[in-house]
Image (tube, rainbow, N blue to C red):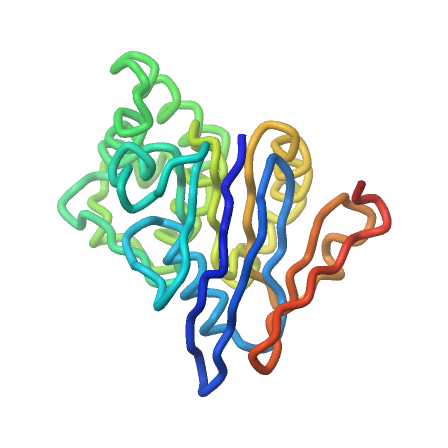
Length: 216
C-alpha cells in the first residue's frame, strides 16, 4: 500500500513549501513550528482540499480523481471537527462503522465495545451537541484510532488527548504501524522515542526528512 506525494506545493505564514514523499505502512510524523502547514497538508491528503501545485496518488491513482473511493480508505482526526449534533453518541458510532463498510450487526457490536471499553456508556443516549467539547474530542480520538480505514490522518492528536488515554494510545499506534499508513502532526517528537517512525520537519519553507534510530 502506498500514498505518493509528488512536488506538492503550499504556502503558509509567508513561507512556500514543496514536498515529495512516499508513505507506506508505518508511523510518519509531521513536525516543526509551522502548525498551519502541517494542518493544511493533512487536509490536502483527505482529498477535500487541492494543493497549490503537485499530485498525490493512492495505489497509483490520483486521489482527487478517485474522490469518495479514496476517502473511504481514510480516517481523519481534525483540529476543527464537525459533528452531526442531532446524533446520539451510540448512533454516531454505529453510523461511522457503517461508513467503514461494516455490516449493521458489526457496527452495532463495535459501538457497544467502544462505549464499554472507554467508559462512555453513560453518554450513549445523549446527542453530540449536548456533550462537552472535551468528551466530543475524546470520542473522535477513540473512533478514529479504531477505524477500519487503512490510512489514519491525525492532526495535533496529542494536544487534545485526555491524560488517561496516553497509556493505550501509543501501544495501539505501534500495533497498527505494520497494517496502516499513519500520519501524525506533532509539536514534540520525543514521545515517539524508541518507536520506529519517520519524521518530516517543516521549518521556514523547507522540509527535511529525519529517521528514527529504529527506522529501516
